[in-house]
Amino acid sequence: MGRPAAAAALLCQLGLSAAIQWLGLAESGAAWSEARQCRLVPGQLPLCRRHLELMPSVVRAARLAQAACQLAFADMRWNCSSVRRAPSLGPDLLRGTRESAFVYALAAAAVTHSIAQACSSGELPLCSCASVPSEVPGPDFRWGGCGDNLRYGLQLGAAFADSPVKSSKQGTQALRAVNLHNNAVGRQVLSDSLDTKCKCHGVSGSCSVKTCWKGLPNLDEIASDLKSKYLAAIRVTHRLIGPRKQLVPKEMDVRPVKETDLVYLTHSPDYCTPNLHLGSLGTQDRQCNKTSAGSDSCNLMCCGRGYNTYTEEVVERCHCKYHWCCYVVCKKCRRKVERYVCK
Image (spheres, helix red, strand yellow):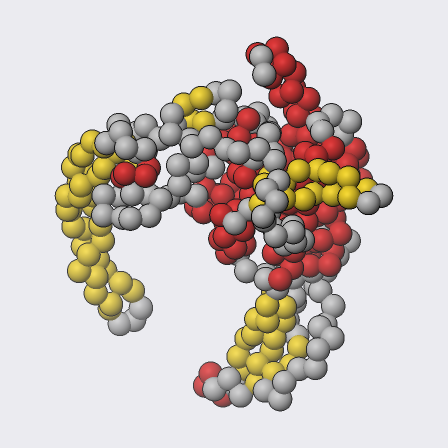
């Protein structure tokens, strides 16, 4: 594909980028007191105007999603640093890659997660705690507390994440289908993570009775689950099967796509060297682990180029003592550590 054709294809995909451009709100200082501020989320403009009260939750979701993505991929060549550039997104997140599959799923989960917890914390006027679970409580606990309102979070979270993809006239049908599929996977992983949380009651903390509710884990746990799905993601094509087009594996010997699989259209670069056309920032100057055999090892992270070693002095708390009652006093210790950085 020549440069003009490649540029046209990329511009065609930019319409779909609005679906995750809102991740750039992590740096937003908007007070969200007026509907005109909704211009910051052009892909979700109508929903923002109707539900302006949601936007602080969306900003929080953007911050948590960026942090969770970078934590999950800190030991990989692609370390999710490109989400920090939102709303300007690179080819790694525009071309239906394995990486964009992860970010779409995480973003969809994050906005649902944030709204569900905003309900239970009393931040939103149109929702409150989740309904009491239908399952019968055990003999040693009772339902109570304030559960995360996953139902409301899923309803508005899906509308927020999916509406730009569904309404876009740009991009291919295949890319729209892949992005919607990965959004749904993110919400499904979040839904499956809803768990029973309890608080003990009783004399002297005996926990003779527990009050329990349904709550969500922190977003880092969801990101970790999605990373496992990223590593097992399936490359697909959008093909007519019967009366409608479906996402099917590109390779014939791969099992059918499940609703819980992350899917992608385009192979990713190896991310070893900088290449703006592919969205690769390279791994030069990245820190590596000399003793690791995993993806953060100096051999893999540095792509065989070798690494430089330098010594750094760090200051740590040490010799800590507990004093009755009730504080801890520590000294400060200095020690030298070796760091390894890719050439």
